[in-house]
Each structure stands twice: as C-alpha cells, then as structure tokens.
Image (cartoon, rainbow, N blue to C red; front, side, top):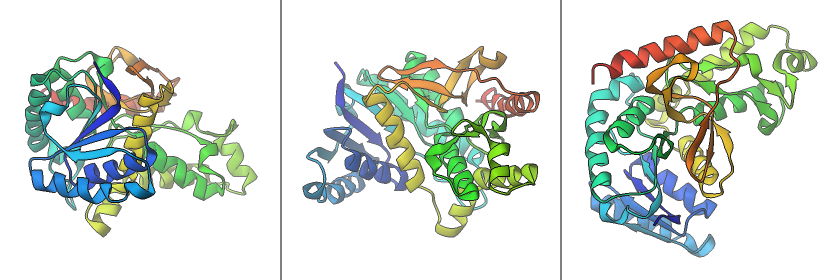
Length: 312
C-alpha cells in the first residue's frame, strides 16, 4: 500500500539535493529517501538537510536503496548526466536513456506502486522511455515538463508589466527545450488579454516584446549554465509544486510531460501538455484551443522528438 507521506529521490546531484531541501521546507512528506550511486553523497545530503529540521518540520530524511521504494507515493528521478555549457538537452539522450532504463528496472523489481516523476533531461523523451520500460499505467508516469518554463514565462511577463506573477495566466507547451511553444493566444492578466494589458501599461510593440520574452524563457537554462554551471533551484521549486498537487489532490492544470494517445492527433511520444494533476497522477490531458501558428509549432516540436524516439 502506498504511503502518501513518503517520497523518494533518485539522484543526489544539484537538482536532487535542491529538491529534497525544497520538499523538506514545504512539509509535504514525513519521510524522504535519497538514493544515489554514490551512497556517501546521499548520506551527506541527508545529514546536511536533516540538521535544519529543528527549525522546520519534523520528518525523516535518510539515504536508502531501491528496496525502500515499494510504498513511496512519489518517486522523483533526477539522476543523469548534467547539461554542460554549449550542450542542448537533446545532446544528453543516449547517456541518459541508458541510465533511465537501469533505474526503471530496479524500480520494477521492488514492485513500486507510486507515481514516477521524471526530471532528468531530455525530460520528454525520458518520460516516454520510463513509461515503456516500466509498463505502469500512463497516469502514474509524468515528467516535470514545462512547469518550470511556464513559471519563467509568468515571471518575465510580470516583470515586463510590473504586475504580480500570480495574476499572469499563460503556458509553455511542447518540448522542454529549444522547440517549446508559448501559447500567446490564451495568455492573459487576470482575464484581461495580454495585448490589452500591455496597452494599459504603455507597451505598444507587442510582437517584439512577446518574442523577446519567449526567447528569454527558451534560453534561460543556457544563460544560467553559462554563468553558474547548472540550474537547480527553479526546477526544485517546480518539483515541489507538482508534488503538492499530487499529495493534496489539487486537480491543478500543469504542463507536465505526458504520453500522448491522440491528443492533437499525436501519439507514441511524450510532450509537455497541460493536464489535470491530483492524487492519482495525470487525471486528464487537456487539449487547448490553439491557433493555427501554435498548432504548427507544436507539431514541429513533436516531429523533432518523434524522430529521436524512433531511433531508440
């Protein structure tokens, strides 16, 4: 039986350890198991985070192994080769597909019953691989997708318009990567169409402004990696947000990476598409009313990933 207050993180690099720290502060779980091929690294991260529990929330954070995964409600997989300066997420494919297959094999062996949350890149391809290799129902396998990209979009729009990011409603879909798509046609500020709100703020060059924001969202990881070597805080908060939607059964629309079976006429791959997320994982994949240009961009993104998947 699944313990809804237990999570596991596989991979204790920058992303995995940052996620553990963020989850501890959020107090979603009573137990977090850290697993890494370097057991000492997992032990050190668990010790370091645990030493702050006196100022946070009581919980058990410890290094463990795959035998402890059977009853974990959420299994977060961050393990994989990191993206280096000059690399795209897709450059990581062959190394990380092999790692993902080995991890999923271990997860299957212990009869894990929880939800797999894939974070390692390229996340859409690895989500597809995890689903195929695990044989789990599709609702129990999702990737972090463009949840972080969407947060970046909302943040940059909020800075551009000097408005609270929580008032910004928009979404990035498609590949979590260079071909991702911003759905400008439905973007709004608390119900006010984006272009209209821009006018209220004195911004007139809508196409130029939107393109600049999109490029900054798309290229954010490259910009951060160039400056500090890796990205991890933002994605750790995105992981925590997804876990909160699962644990608290929020039925929230999130652009997680999900296996498509006819949505937008696409099948046989995982893409980041807005979906309702709750206690059972992916409850329903939502098909947004895209305009013709957005559909064209989404199909191009899908074709880019499908071509790679067909070679695996």
